[in-house]
Length: 247
Image 1 (cartoon, rainbow, N blue to C red):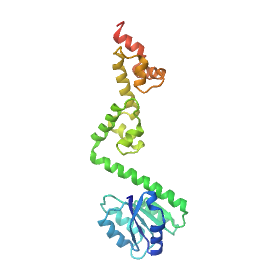
Image 2 (image 1 turned 90 degrees about the vertical axis):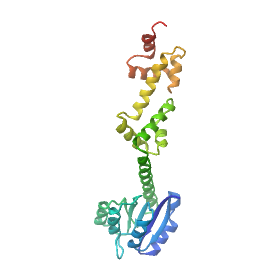
Image 3 (image 1 turned 90 degrees about the horizontal axis):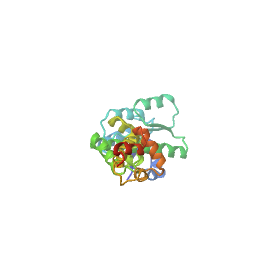
Image 4 (image 1 turned 30 degrees about the horizontal axis):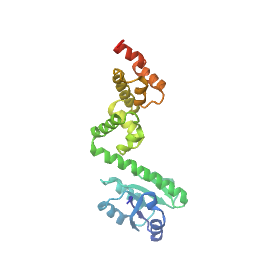
C-alpha cells in the first residue's frame, strides 16, 4: 500500500494536482488525504496513522510552520515526517522548519527530477526508521541471537548484507549495533567463529587442510593459512603437529 502521505495547501488546485499527478505509488507512497487547511489536517493526523505530512507554509488560520510545531509536541505512532512545500525562498522559514523537526523544506519551483530525488530519499529515511522501530519490541537479545545463529548456520558464506536483511536493518546500522552489543565487529565475530571451528577440525585427521580451507569459505588455501596464522599465531600445519604430534 505504501507510506501514507497527506497534502495540505490552501489552493485546492495545487493539492489536488500534486496528489493526482505526482507518481506517489511508484515511489512507495499512497495519498491518504488532501486538505486546504492545516487545522483540519492536524485533526486528521491525531486520529489516523500518517507517515508523511506535506504542507504549504503560508496559509490562513494556521501556517505550515505552526502545524509542524503542533505535530512536534504530539505523541504519535508512527511519528510522521513533515515536509514543508513552499513558494517562499526565505531563510527564516527553513530555519524554523529545522527547529520543529521538519525533514525537508522544498520550493514549489523545484523541478520534477529534484522532487523525485527528494521524495526517494525521504522514502529511504522512512524505511530505516520503521525498520528500527519494528526491531526495538523484539528486544536486544533476540536481534543479536538471530545474527549469531545466522553466522553459525552459514559460516562459509556469512556476510553483513544477508545478516542485515534477516533482521530488517541497514548494514551500517547492524555494523554499529552489533559492535555496541557484543564488543566486537561483525567481521571479527565471523572470523572468530571460523578460526575456532578450524582449530577443532584440524584435530580430526580425516580432514585435509585444504578441505578445511574450503569449508571455511576460502577458495585459496594460502589465504586460509594466512588468516589462521594471523589469528592463532601459527600455521594450520604447525597447529596440527603441536596438538597431535606424530599421530
